[in-house]
Image 1 (cartoon, one colour):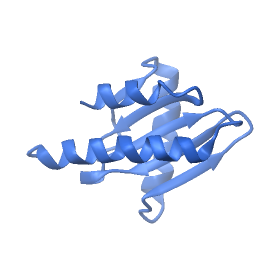
Image 2: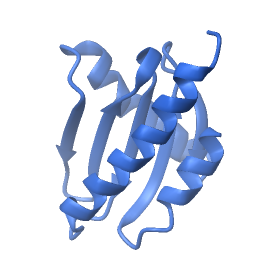
Image 3: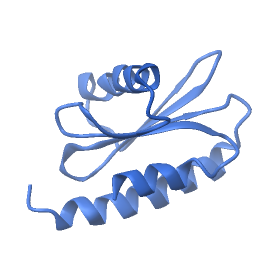
Length: 110
């Protein structure tokens, strides 16, 4: 399920990468699936673990915008976007993806 949701997010013209991390910070699904992307997204997700738990946090850098969204069961969705992105559209896509993921995670036993 996680693979379908991250792949669907990549349909946006603005989104460069997406990943779902489990409650331990390990990547469950990543698009693209290369090791450099996985490493970068996991590092940025650590920010969410190190701070108070917010539903969503944005990090703006010179090269990209990262949006970190908390999910059910302490899972995390991390999305990397272009700096010229339509953030309203991206947040709507993330909200839809998070709803799908939360429903799936809530239905699993762990």
